[in-house]
Length: 174
Image (cartoon, rainbow, N blue to C red):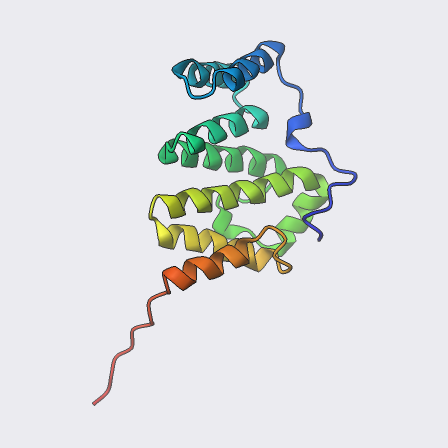
């Protein structure tokens, strides 16, 4: 499966957004960095709580404001919503190639969004210093993306270069 092929697939931002929510997102973009930007994004979220465009706006706002715990919650919510639409397991840990194939047939664009949200959560976890949690997500992505089109395997290499996995403990016999 070519995760970089966008032909013939609907992308998350093509979903209709209520006019008022769109206006609030535009306001947030103009007022970026101010408290009114966050308030506008939160109001848009109240109007369209399951719209992925709104969640992406919130994620970006929190990530670039270095509010990483909030960004992580939004990334996980985006995964929950898109995963549910795709019929994926509730936990990313249960993802497998068969499930990805079924999800890709339903909506390749939404599947790619889900996988990128998983990668985004991994990056936030790295920034929070939660290396094992991040590494587990990256390792899952790397096994599912054999051609490393999303870059998870490369990122995992960098993580392991700076944070090698601990050696397995074994009982020594004397």
